Structure formats: structure tokens, C-alpha cells
Image (cartoon, rainbow, N blue to C red; front, side, top):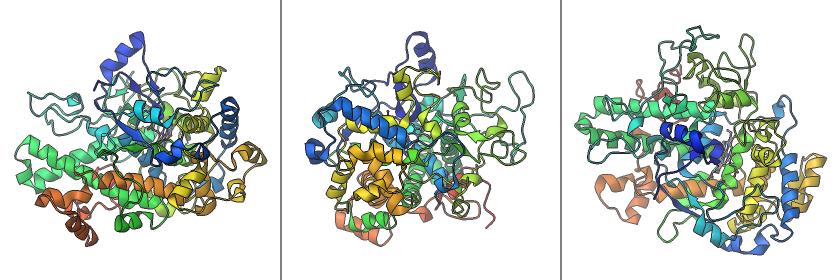
Length: 581
Ligand code: HEM
């Protein structure tokens, strides 16, 4: 294994740094996850069956048509219509992105040894065997938060870790958290209202010269995911305090304390991913049926966990359609009266260490996030408020994507007007997803539905509610539909865009629960840790009778409440005020 020679960028696109830039960035951002794991297909037979794929001959024509389809599913520029809103609160979008960064990376990199990729107008789809052999996931496909912990603190000087700089010098079991700027670099006040609690200035990622010092730099690609990562840093530190106070036996030495705190953080996270995240974004009963009846499709291959390409390259990219063009971010950055300016997608992407924190394009005034740019999470988590389908909702999971996703400001080069077709393509997320699916031989939506035993979308459903332009672009793909488009359309016509449809739900939930269930250190296998090895039937019995680890065995809020929702999690992290009820 080698250290990663790259800087992760937005959504996983990896820029190879050159010359001076490389030296400068590498000195500042150490990627501390040193792994290569397997990608594979959930349904390898389908990936090898030409009938289940878009045609590989006439590839230039297909590439051209996929680009037209990508163009047609992007909104026109302008305000987002209310009917674009779902009933899902927007925290789920960025939680989804955070999960992606924890378990999968690299599908967007040109495969080693290969001189072609989706930026070439005449690429040919790769054979599945080549993909499995050459394309490697630069993440462990388990919910271990390697994106937060890296390889952990150095607690034994004999075994130094690469991530040691992410941990506090005077208390190495805790993660560093950044300090917000109170004034600009010239000592002038920063405009905007203060956000309580005003004395809490630990609400940024730790930074060196603006660049986030975290284990996965993709978590600083936009301000919302950066604030979500900050919540994890704080949650971990609060768990350390909780263990010291409530379980002194587990705090006798730093190693024991760190392991106990990290285990609790991971189990809370995994439990919430299954019981809050998945239950919110997948069709009702999908999660329960997998937990009760077992996994039907995801099983380790050759004894190893793998990341299914149908998940990384198609189904799990459903989150791209939930991204809004503007948010009700906090009291200063919203469209409400009295605010400084709206929290547009482009501003939220500009306000990170990779751009210009705290200022308009050009050198921003601060080296860390200004105190009044922190997120107010109560605007992002409330299901009642989201049910009104206004700004405090994620967008529907459907075939309409927010306009700025066709002009990604941090992808490609920095000039959004650069007419170079490759730069324009890199800035267009819908085209990239569709071309990536073709390049990596992802089976069509119809073949996935067949494999899963789910009734296929009809041609009428595939076209339902589409603009004439979209239907024209879709025409060549009505029999064989790219899986990413199919999953979005299924959600739109069968679940009103308020959750994934059946195909999307199955692939997403089978993969996530499959990875958690097959990870011997996960919360679902906890009885094994506490009581030595258990037989399968004993584990099943424990599961059935709800004896596996659950939040009643974890940390508690000051009022004794358990961590059962993402709001509880943020509250325990101290970044969401305690709820009044
Ligand atoms: C917030 C705005 C987001 C932006 C700008 C963004 C951008 C991107 C980009 C540019 C790629 C690489 C595309 C390619 O060339 O193949 C990507 C990959 C991906 N995105 Fe996003 N993304 C966002 C949010 C999300 C969300 C909310 C989810 C899921 C809930 C998600 C899931 C993924 C996955 C699974 C990949 C593939 C990762 C891998 O390489 O294994 N993204 N994204």
C-alpha cells in the first residue's frame, strides 16, 4: 500500500497536483487513509451480459446521447419552484454525502494503466473484469469513520500514526477542532448578526493556512458537509468527556479510553445510519425487512467485503438530486428579511478552505470560518418544517437537478466561462454520472429491477411528467435506461420524490446494511464482542429480541435522553440547541 499521492477534491474527483502546488498542498493536507479495497458488481452476470448494458458499439453516438440526457435533467437557471421540494430535511443530503466519503472513493479517477476516461469523446466502456481488477476503492467499505479518524492518534510512541496531527497535543484522545474568526485578518469586524452561544468559537474544521486538516479533504468541499464533519469531531470529543465521567474504568489509560470512545461513536453512527438515515431515504419497510429476513443480494465475495459499483456509480448518487441551489443556512445567510445575503450553492462551495473563506471571490478576509458563518442546524433537521415543502427541505429525489450542478465551481479549472469542452464536462455533474455509468459498465435500470425481482418501470412511467426536451433525449434509452436516471425516475413516479423507489431502496439499503452486518466490529455484532464468539443462531436470536446494541447502551444527553435521531446526535455534539420538548 502506498500513501495517497493525491488531493481529494469535490465529490471524489481527484486532482493530481503538480509542481509547487503539490508540495504546498501535500505539506498541509495529509491523506491518512492508506487503503485499497475492492469494487465489484452486485450483479456481475448482468455486467457481463451485453443485453443488460447500453450498447458498446456505436459508442460515440451513445456518449453524445448521454450528454444530451444529462443536459435535459438540469433545471433552467432561476429560483427553485416549490414543487421541487421533498419532505426530507436537508441534513439528509449532506449526511448522505458524508457517508459516501466514509465508504467509497475513486470511481471518478482514470483507471490505472489506461489512457482514456469520460473526458474523451470516443471512450469505449471498460470490461467488467478489467474494472474489478484495476479500479480500487480508496476507502474501507465499513462504517468506521476513517474519514474522521484517519489511522488514529499516536498513543504509543513506538507506533506513530499519520493522523497524529489531527489530534490535540495536550489531550491526544481528542480530535482538534478549528476556532472561528471573530474579526477579519485586518482586525475589522465581520458583518452580520452574532449566533448564540456567542462564546462557542469551536465550530470550524481545524485548518492550516485555510486547508482543512482532516482525514478526507472531500469533507471540506462545501460548507454544509464541512459543518457536518465538525459535528463529528465535537461528538467524539464529547463522548470522551462522557466516558471519563460515566465509565471511569474505561478511562484508566489513553488507549482504553480512545478505543471505548471511538467504539461508542462508531456504533451510534452506524445505528443512526440504519435507523434514521436509511429509514428516511428508502421506501418504508425496506430496512425492517432486511433486518428481519436477512440480506438477499449483498454477500461478501471471496470472504471480502466489496463496494458494489451499482451503488457507487448509480443508486447512491441519488443524493445529487437532493442538492438545493440555495439554503436557509443561518440568520445571516438566507432569503429572509434582515439577512446579509442568500446562501447560494455557489457561496456554500466558495466558503471552504479550498476557496476563499469569508469573502467574495478573491482572497477572503479570514483564515478560518467567521463566527457568523456557522450553520444553524435547527433549519436543517426538522421533519415538520420539511413537510411544508419549502426551503427547509431537500429537493425531491427525481430527474430534476439544481442548475449549479451543471456549473460546479470547484471542478475542472476555476474559470466557469472557459469554453474548453473538457472543463465544461467536469463541471457538469449529470453528464459525469451518466458517462461514468457507461464507462464502468453499470447494468441498466431494467436489468437491475429484473435481478431484484421488482416490477420494471413502464415506458409511460419513464416519460411521465417529463418536458418535451427530456423525452426527446430519453427516447434512445427507453428500453435500456442508465441506472442512475432509472433510480431517480423510479423515486419520482413511484414515491413522489419523497424517498427512493424499490430498486433504489434495495440497492442502497442492502449495501449499507450488508456492509454493517458483515463487519464483525459493528453494532450489529456487538453481543459477540461483549460475550466472546456467538453462534449465528444466538446472534439472530439476540437481534430478534432487540438485544443487539442500541442507543439505550450508549451515551446520554444531559436530560438522560438517548441518541435516536440525527438531531440528538447534533445536540450531544453541542452544535444544536437542546430541543424544548
Ligand atoms: C453537495 C453536492 C455534491 C456535489 C457537488 C457532488 C459532486 C460529485 C462529483 C463531481 C463526483 C464525481 C463524479 C464522477 O465524475 O464520476 C461525485 C461522486 C459521488 N457522489 Fe457526489 N456530490 C455531491 C453530493 C453528493 C451526495 C448528497 C451524495 C449521496 C447522498 C453523493 C454521492 C456520490 C457518490 C457515491 C459518488 C461516487 C464516489 C466514489 O468515487 O466512489 N454526492 N459527486
